Image (tube, rainbow, N blue to C red):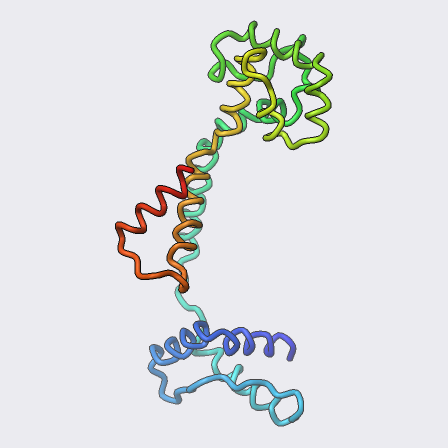
Length: 212
């Protein structure tokens, strides 16, 4: 009975779901058409019988038939095959992200984790990393601040290549961030409390919000 009550509540409590269910019943074109499902009332024991009978009567009509499982299986498998090589580059960058989070725990002698595509002169970068690991002031900053704030404090003059590499890693998903920010700003601007804006006004407001 608990499972039946959950089904009924899911259909009836949400207005959109309830409308979709009623439209679905209408599309079935049944001879003995059921107009709706009844709410369960815990006070009246007769309600239990009413709700159960309605649910049981609906089962044969809403049963899924001729469902093409293999078709969806092939599509999902193709999607998985496409995703595996798509994120292959991110797996290569995994040691770079470890370096970004804590550059003081990296063993530079046995190999620098920063990949060649990110830097032009690996030897110069290694020297800067070794010097950074001996900088007590930056160590204290790293312990007290998040990684993103730490890299802002790394001096550009003293560690030019290291600073550039850290900033590039932090902003690697900058386009994704801008896209997400755009929708957040648009949702805020087009709220019910807004004045009357044209599409041109919306463009100006979004540009201001994303470039400041």
